[in-house]
Length: 262
Ligand code: SG4
Ligand code: ZN
Image (cartoon, rainbow, N blue to C red; front, side, top):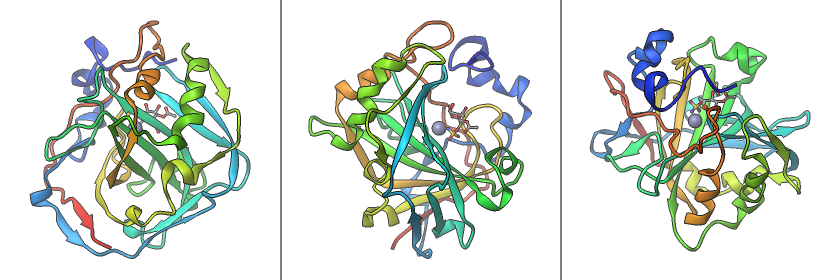
């Protein structure tokens, strides 16, 4: 578990391309989004369904990050926006963070890093499974939320943050005490969800597959310093604390970043 790649040393991002050819591809993520160069567009609204149902949720330490999966049959779905009429199904959500509150996000805005970034990963339902979808250029979409730090933190994160001490060891998992309403964390019912950047990129970890429609919401989430510290206490395969699990930005090359103005 968790030994195939790392964020430092000889298994670090500069060497991912040795084992995984795609990681040196032309359409990699993350990127620096320069607002001056984005193309403003008005896409059809993003649509969310099934996010307001309480679900059993399981949190896992996979050695690289904290991963949350919901348990049950019917899954939350999204469509619209850059996804057009295609329907994508929720797979998992996870986080990226840094050693201190000045860094941690993967994408940057005007070269600014945020303390953390939440990724909610979805796969195109018509491909049948998450695994199958990763073989197609439009197979995945990731909803990305930047996190800034303030005393007045977002209480909807508390059930998740309170479970972190139970999964500090690699491979450990724990069910959240109460069923989770994804809508509370992901804010899928809020108008701010229609203002986002979108571009085509990749998974930000090996195998770095170029199969992701990225949707980065402009309105950041707010956590407290103490809440982010709880993430920094989870341990990796080497038994060390995971204090840096974000990939450096990659060249934009010939891609265009769009900003949706609702
Ligand atoms: C994290 O390492 C997750 O643990 C991985 O999920 C995820 O890989 C990887 O990030 C890349 O995803 O949204 N940052 S990202 O591009 O979803 C996949 C698992 O290992 C394949 C399950
Ligand atoms: Zn991620």
